[in-house]
Length: 402
Length: 114
Image 1 (cartoon, chains in turn yellow, blue):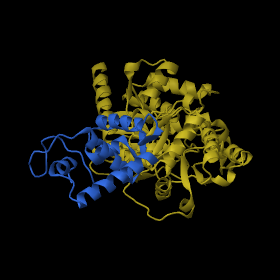
Image 2 (spheres, one colour):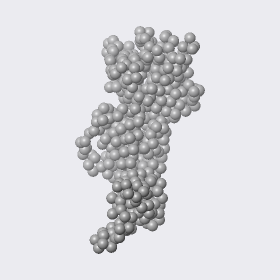
Image 3 (cartoon, helix red, strand yellow):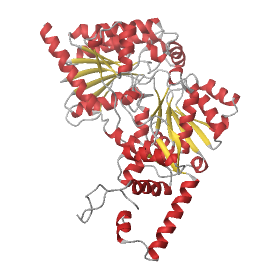
Image 4 (cartoon, helix red, strand yellow):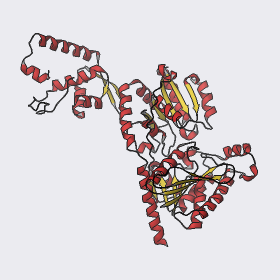
């Protein structure tokens, strides 16, 4: 089976969970004998290049399109990137022009490539997928990792993005949602019949690396970790307010925030205003070994997201033997049990749970040991099998139509 | 360590007496003597059924020998109270003394598995 996949990011050039998810899924699909051509929008000089990545029995090819698009971009941030870019004449005037340009470049790739199914990851690639479907009359599967409602926290939805998402979902032969939470959002906001949506939960690659070195910070302090973009969707402000409450009871706690985003200046200023800036460490964007080190260093990981379609980071934390506290408004809460769950807005509960994990060794050990066992069951092979089943379903339906 | 074992089951294959409530409670008290624990940890370490541990903990809390130090949807943590620690120390002292003086008959030793 040959799949033409359109994505936003692919490691090592990735900025969030989408890249991690695409990598894990494509690797597992390749292990099951699926050939994948992965199209990503990276600003690279010159001609599109081919990179052969993982190959056990299948093949993953990565094709790059020369564009300024980056994952999680807004119209404003696109404007800033474009102003800084050299030779602006070749790039689109706005984010949507750039999506349009990406679509036409993808159309060319679709003409050149031979494939059975088109698989698109998130809204920026949906138009490319629709175009490829029109050109080659192949079934289209759209994979929804996040909706505009998640990214904006249900406020200030960009109508243009919403329209592209809606169009893509209606044009698709099947929709993959990363959780039932996302499936509900799709049926509620986009008018899609539930039977067209398949829930395929994400998974995690187990980390075998262990970093024994103890940071100086950890010697006298407990560490609470936040990993994610510092944006409205991820609830960094709730993390900050909960930190304030935790520090009222235990001064020997340090809070590490890994990631960056538009709310970073606000969080830094607010931390200073609350008088807890010295207890905060802003590590910026981390990946690879540095990120694993951060997980292993922490005593507890917190995911306070306002709306999280899935959330791979708690699984990564569990794989690194660190207990997790997650928002109930997340898809990952559907697949894990050995964690503490809170409503993102309930700062009292959140701070109380952080203190419980830090103070009660028995609770910490119970969460750590059980979560470590639980996360072993969440391999990428399960979502890969489900995806193959969906591909077969749409191919079967497509052949009946012909 | 004191460890619960089902009636009729023993490492040597010989029949062991039915565990009394007192014996199970002693198992729980001595497991908690080391440090505070969840019901799951107590059940795993003593070999006593989870539900049985929970019921005996309720009794021991009523006797003020054990305190519930943390309660959440995920886990409950129990620790020995000062009274419980005193009880455990005194009980062990008495048993040691009785053993040394040969005052503990065979039946009592069998029941306590010592």
